[in-house]
Length: 102
Image (cartoon, rainbow, N blue to C red; front, side, top):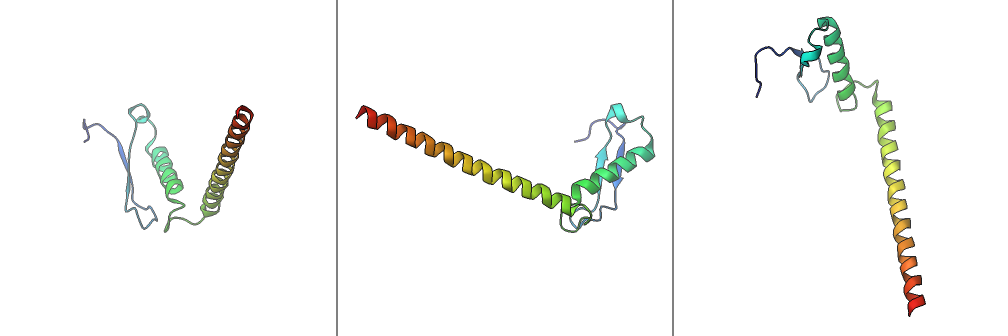
């Protein structure tokens, strides 16, 4: 629900993406005094960045998007190995502790 009638809005219609027909930006009240051209340029740049990795989006940023995806996958794999190593260390320590007691 939109309250008040004095909200500034920018519509980006040329999304160049098959999923989005248009994107609507609501301008912050403290930034409403900025130049219209500047705000439109910022809105278009943001929309382009956010939709670049999606199917149908611009291809120019796909290499960067894929690099980030690979880094995330590698980080996840490293976390899995570290968690496995910690679990193994805990089991080994428990076995040693109980073998000394028993």
